[in-house]
Length: 126
Image 1 (spheres, one colour):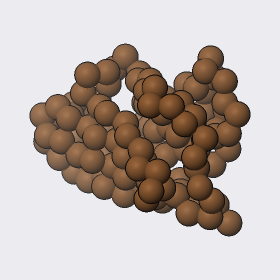
Image 2 (cartoon, rainbow, N blue to C red):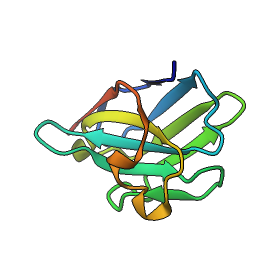
Image 3 (cartoon, rainbow, N blue to C red):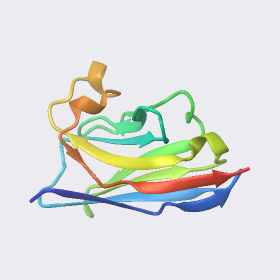
Image 4 (cartoon, helix red, strand yellow):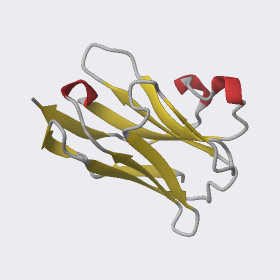
């Protein structure tokens, strides 16, 4: 059974940093596109960042570019999201996702991903 489990969320103040982790079990995700998405109350799930397949190519939403960094540890089968200079508008439930065979033009689409974690809450106070 495939599982993605996120951790690292919490309550922080604006300007602080957090590091989210996503542990994958049940299969290796080498070759998969790994992504982070977030969803705030009353809003649609939105793309945050992704690592495309086995490459080191990273993609970010404009709203987080320069502040967030996605990385992957293949040996540990984990994906991380380092979030710096957090803002109140970053408050959301953050999800890890994995997808096989995703084409680059769909990397920002939640429906392109096959597996999802349960989410970890990030709350940023002003």
